Length: 178
Image 1 (tube, rainbow, N blue to C red):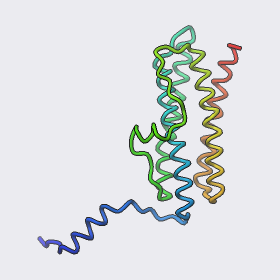
Image 2: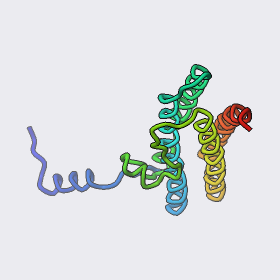
Image 3: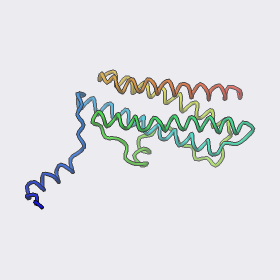
Image 4: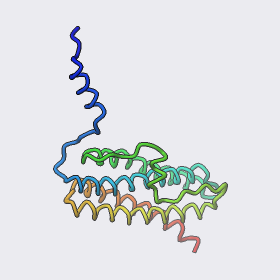
């Protein structure tokens, strides 16, 4: 078996320590801006996913089954967004979230750790969070437009539509409380 020379070993170690490099025609500035916007979106999606599952797990009352199933569907939609967001960030040579702590530093969706939340308050809170997420997705879309990143922008368009659908469903439910 042939051994590597000390120079070759040093080169291999440097290569391993180097950040991942992904070829893209986007500028470093574009990558930084888009990755920053999308990492914030990713953190918000994870936070909203967990809040949605929290409310799904703790739902009660006369509409338990309907709300429980709806929030399970919404949680699945949110979780399904996470991998495409992170992979898109990596495709453009950006770094992405690495931990729960990283998520907590970037998330803008507020947690709800209350012991008990009324079912219609859960619905109202999730409706507002989804509405806010749609607005933040539009802001991220603007960043992509500024840098001519049509691939990320087209993904965002689908997520805006899904988010508006969740907002619509939740808003129709909460309308009954007014």
